Length: 442
Image 1 (cartoon, helix red, strand yellow):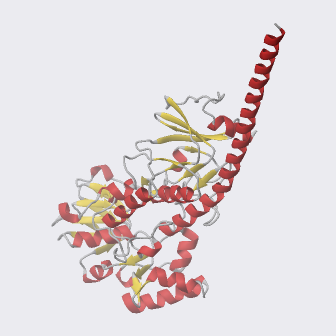
Image 2: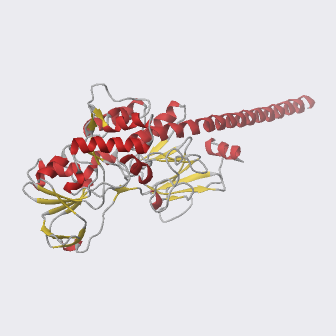
Image 3: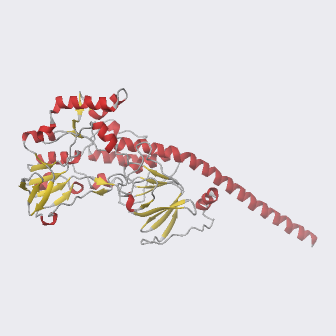
């Protein structure tokens, strides 16, 4: 049955019984996709397409924006740099240019992605927002709908990533606050906040860096620290902390490496608990492995907290006019609030499948190195909470898994085509011989 459906899908002369289904968004065109269909043209989608192409498998990419890597293009602040060294952030099959610095800037990373897409001749279909994707058991294929088209494919790769939708918390009195409340996705620089008192909610890498950026524009930033967290120096002994950790993990268990990192950190940056940044009981690598919580790699924010240029506050209790009340009873006046509260996956809003992604978090339910493959030709790339390194690993695995299926199906389809044409030719030849025989009888 699968071979027959493959033939129907790829034979332009074969009339298929598949017709576009109807829902709230009724597509006007029906598109049959030869190879895998990738949703998302960020680093994950580009990496998956490049790895597939390297295996000889063509893929189509759908992207809701009008460009590749829209998150990096439009929803990141100006001073952003990669927090990890470039060798841990490059996509498969193409390293960063040699002249790039250890920690490439936002502009350099975007330039790299543009070159990557050009090098592998990747041409996404832009302005194509997927509204639903569902496996059709009747024909054994995926139906992926946008507002304009309905795509049908055998393999579906979800590459929209962990950062598709902003997380915006709600606080009591939020609508009464007089100043602007913006998510970091809308923050570019501290220029428009000069000489103002700004409260940054969230103490991850983005929150810490936004505070540092605000200091450079003569603002008065404060930081809300809602939970315990690990702060590590970006480098130890002239080596990136991340790279050193990866090397140590080859020889020692996680807990031993964690103890080493915390010992060196205490020597280099002191006791963070004294400035309101208490550490969790679990070590930084163990926290990352179990909960996916990334440690903060300090690039100068901690020194600003110690000097008093950045004040630290606990959770927000409520807002009123331009006053913020915290859970410890303190009340302070602020001109603006910046939410460095992160992002989440939006996959559950459009993917109608329960085999791979969690409905609550929109992330694969299986652990890293197992969560890239679902059922019926469904795959995931870029949901590992391990950055671009995790993306590269998954993109490679997906391509290696699909390539044999693609080659097998191509052989099956070719065999069917050849036999069909032999059959057609034989029938025509028999008809010609019968016609000649009748003419000779006459």
